[in-house]
Length: 350
Image (tube, rainbow, N blue to C red; front, side, top):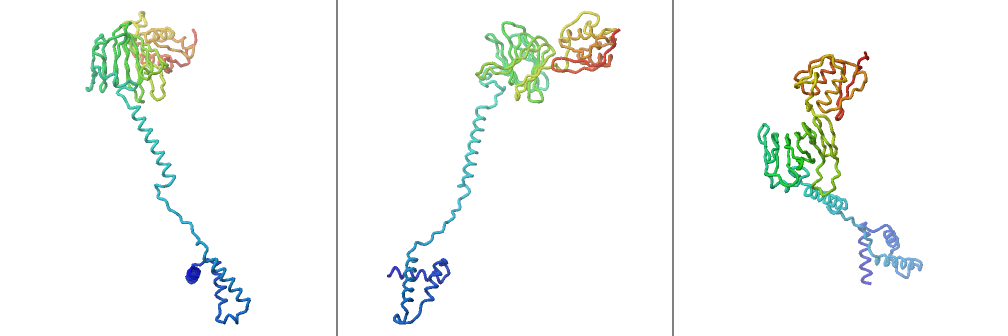
């Protein structure tokens, strides 16, 4: 009974403090209202039985396990699932960036390992004018300001290889048995004997323009360990190609200032002067194509019926000659790739 009374007192204490649950409170109220000070003999049998039932109910409630309320555990922010997921993603991204930085470290010349040029002669142009460099085979390189050329003291083997960082004009000595190769950012320029310029353009591309001879340009895949499948472009005088590293496209066209590459005999061109006297446009077009190595296409066949008289003395830039020609026949021209298109009403046939 000691345990029973102890539990009963706890129940009464909770009843007095108002912390008992509604069901137990109802039982206690019913019990409390039934209490009186009459002697047991004076109490009706029905009331005694009721009290006994109530006491049994109270005793049963006293030995019930206390109700356990769920406690809400507040997790720290760094213990949340979302934080763990974000941390994992950040780790993976950081690892990838680090891997790319290590494996794709920029080299001095794009697509050329630094180890290939480390033992070569290095010439840097820190001046504000062209720097002339003479190579062992007789070739000459005019190095532009801020540019660097790497080359061997003496060319050995079946090829002549040099490496250019920046811009340069090359006048290559002719040697058909030993092709001359210029490795510049992303591309390789291959020649036998010619003169050409390699320059970077404003859109991070690289441009090769030919003055004389024949040049072949392709993407540099030599040091990637892959089959050479890149496109190769063949350039003749007054032609150029621009390579874009991002798109890997090679776009051909005409140089900015085409000059005469073949001297012609005849009345239309003599000693570097163009002088026309009632000359048919068809004849002028044919002579200009041969002199500059370009293709000029009249889009209106009636243009061939026109004749002009004009003096283009001491002018070698093709576009300046065309300006004079078009002004004389009320025409215009447009450069599309490697070809020039003439537009205008033309002349009626005589």
